[in-house]
Amino acid sequence: MDKELRSKIIELFEYRELPKLIAYGGQKWDEQFYEDLIQLQYDIYKLDHELETNWKVDMSIIEARWKAIHKDLGVLGVSASEYDKYSNHIYKYQKHEIGIRDGKLPTRLSMEYFYFYKSCDVKLLRKLIYDRNPELAKVIRTSEWRTFDLVTEINDDVVDLQEDTTTINGNRFLISLLQFGKEKTVKIFNDFLDEMDVRNKALNVKSIEGVEFVEWTDTQIKETKELVVSQAACVDDLDLGIYERHMGVGVG
Image (cartoon, rainbow, N blue to C red):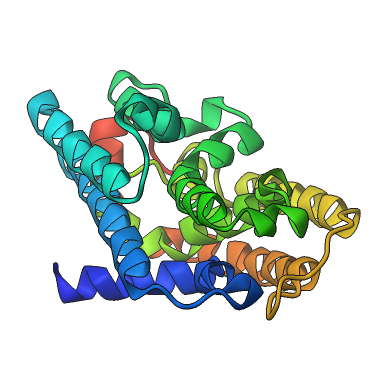
């Protein structure tokens, strides 16, 4: 496995608090389980790479990527009859990415709907961790991670602005800047983050050992709002040729 990509995966796991979930309740750290999750994320990234680097998608390669992902799920204890159930959200997001080729840009969808499916990989990993330790659901139900996932997924798009200009990536923040311009995009994103702030503060959930859930999400909302403003200010300095050629959108 590529060392740089492995480091990126571990960084993702730590940012989304997955190691603390794995260790919840005094669970003995299972290094093999952790490595199997890394392998699954690696193969999801390989699938994503195909969609981000090739305007003409070779479905035979996509099918091969899915065979690898399903094999990983089998290693993690998922029965073959449930592969599609566990993969459903990723299938949906893949459809969104392929739809870009037909002019179906992410901005046609609501913020919540789009980012719900864009966080598909993290939700899958978390589900596998919850399957392994059902006690977690007594503290925070999987559905209660929704606000956390939406905020952190938006943060990823905003942070990755410069990196994603070189790929055919469904980065909604970047595409919004191109379509609607800086002022409108900042308002769209920060209004949504304000909505997430209200929803987060209304959550009545316990903390998982080492994870002050509501407080952590609150910090991410504040930091992401600041990033939205600073990153939007950088758009004029970016080479956006790939987006303008392939997606038919220019700086608004």
